[in-house]
Length: 115
Image 1 (spheres, rainbow, N blue to C red):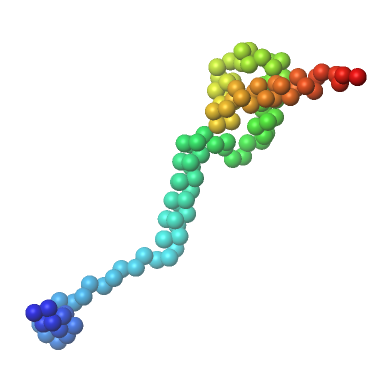
Image 2 (image 1 turned 180 degrees about the vertical axis):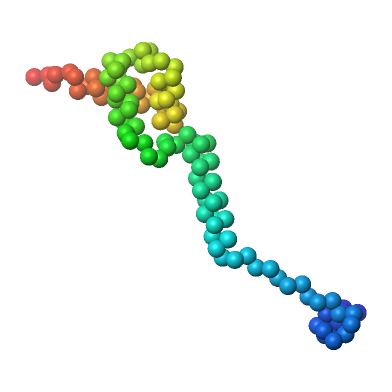
């Protein structure tokens, strides 16, 4: 029976033959566009999820943190809630750690060398 149905589909002269469906192919350009779009979307979600620094920022993170340290004389309690949130966003949640590290560096530079 299976042989008979295979013959019917293979022989176009028989009136009961069902033509085999044509396979539709996706053009390579469409595939490339979809792949590029998906990679961009994944990268965008990755930066949002892990709070990665955004591209195109003019100043490095270290300079921004050092400006905050200089403005507050190394006292993190003088930062406003918004400034601390900004530091946390720039440093992926490590704003206080970065601030304290840069404050210690600045304090070491300010001390004169012992004779």
